[in-house]
Length: 513
Image (cartoon, rainbow, N blue to C red; front, side, top):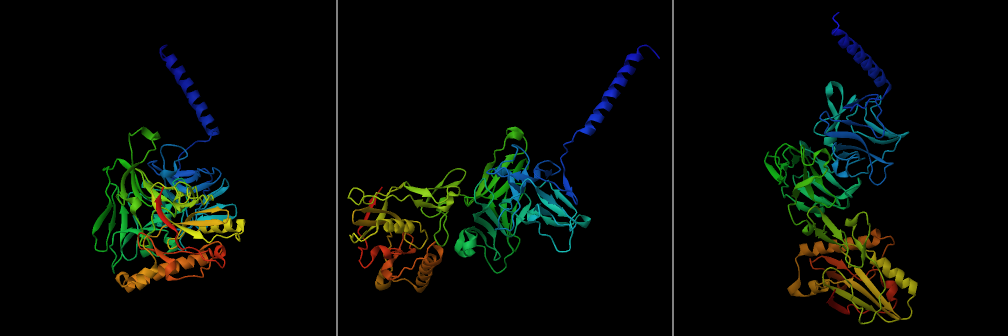
């Protein structure tokens, strides 16, 4: 062998020895390999997940932001921060469309047991099960490059898929034939107040608090495409168009995207503020993989979110609050002197932070809010018979009552034997004026709707309050109308304060700030 060949031969032997040593070491170490499917017998636990073949999506366990010891079973965009931001979660397991979200723990297991059903368990407790056809057994769980989780049976038949059970989000290529429910908060995963629906009569509607009434009364936006044929389907396509297809095949846009093309990750979401938004994120560039910023490319409705109301005149924010529209979302704010009923869910409304005021001239009507407004002040007959604690308890209880058809008490004052109650002003006058003045008489349809509204207010007093309230004095003078012509019941819950005395029905009605 030529002398020059010896160094090369020695080098080869050294390289071979090193390679063998590395192989032996590798056998002793766990190898992190991204799994792309789950098969029968596999038992992934927290925080395991599988990925789509492209790596764009992940499905598995995601920790809650508020409590890292609890986990969602979810699908999310797999880029940016770890764990993924709440906004990147595009599907999560729920007991039903309007049901609760099961919380997994460190001991929870996702599996396809012998019965072939995809099941999430926590010890002996079954938290969730994918609804599949009876007598059908799944064997493989995959995550497609479209973000669709699929349970496959014999012959790769799809037995269940997450696209068929959307939560608050649609991905490109996904269709909606039922409801898309908002979350209660942007970083939470409980069911919220708003929904997008393709109704059975063909109408596409945005609804508020659907679980408390029917769609016609709860819709705050609609396409007015209802008819005898129905069969309307909502679709979100790969270019970012949110559209609906009618029974005759005609396609109509709901959202047209600002950014076009296929080089974007996209989703459409029924957001917690009641607005449907289409979001985009560049697949390449735009800050690289660590950039988790999503851009709004279109909204439904396109503008005027704070002005939306149902046929019952229910707005986007709860009672006692007002709506402010910003670039990214609607915000519900409290007037000065008010506090949120639920600080974590500000759309629930606001309640007065009751503080008794002196009844002197300088304090009458000092109810602060962002805009000047009229108020009504009711003066009770001067008396020393009031029990101090009883009076305070009664007025604070009345102040917590909020309903569309009940006049709201916004403050009160007391000084010595003097007592005053402050209410929102009803500019439409009383029912007496509509019934007994010929020039103001309304048609029977209006009267029927007014009667139903009054009945709803009474029903709430009887069944909706913590302590049932019996009015005892329903009459035309105690039915007042607001700026929108909605009837409101007044003088409820104050009989204990009046005793055998009488009160002045209306003392002040003036503008202040």
